[in-house]
Length: 367
Image (cartoon, rainbow, N blue to C red; front, side, top):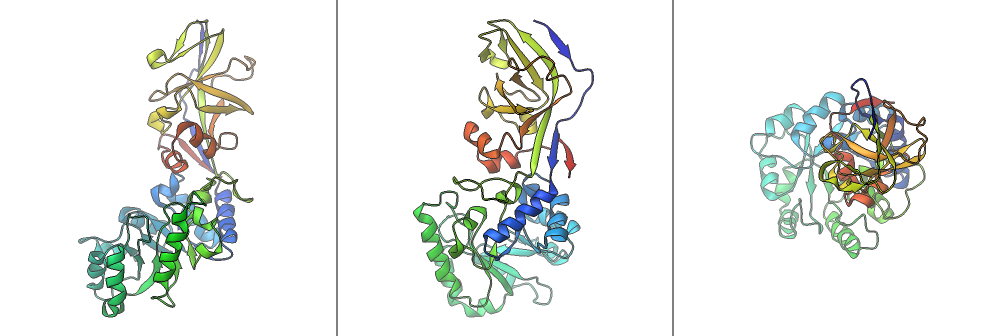
């Protein structure tokens, strides 16, 4: 066995195309029939960098409403979009109220306890809020029993500045699932008790379910970054806004019968040549890609061989000319040739898991 070593260390790269994110956002808004669109930027804007993505959407795409998961994300986001409307999906908890007031952040109230806590805040200090109704996902949101109690308590409603009522779809990624229609009917019935208050149901997948699901505010997330929330083909105008590449560290020649990596799970059945790439599960490239993942180099598909290590993967380059790929070259892990859909299909991970699992060791480049 012979090897050729790359002489210096280098980072794998995550390239984020902000113009594509802006275009994808505008396409989501068009697909929603002109319904206003918020931007779902939780989990560091799906791993793409909230400090870059949010200002681009605010300044260049006209997005004014943003959703994050928790208060810490909201405070970070406020520094980058000082005049935007920011909602926190997890709601408000005792001790957090002063931060919501200080940073002008709106809680999404998920149960009666949160509603009573928020209603007790001095009205002059209290930002507006959203009320989240569970229409069938059985996750966050007022239960049917709490919903009935809140609808009947007009005095409690009057204590709040309700800017939005919302719910969340459980099966928008399966357009034919009957729960979609059930949730639509349940939420529509709730909205009739809140005339004049904007309503929101559709996430990325919900946008593609059609105009009945759009209401007043859609909340795209995955599709805004180029992911596909539906088993159907991506709509025109939605493009991958990310490109993840690793660097070739070494090329290695293998004889028939030699193995690669921990556990010796791949054996060369012919004289083979492999390249070692500087990405592993510590970078979010998980072992679900053992012996099944794909990478790409100048249009050539290069399969992963052996186990994914903490910091490295091996790819089979036997069918490339030796001069075609060298230490220091970039190999695509995710992007135009290796789509989220492809990676999800071979790995059993969801597209959301793959995208948000991108770790901080990548050098980030913004276009």
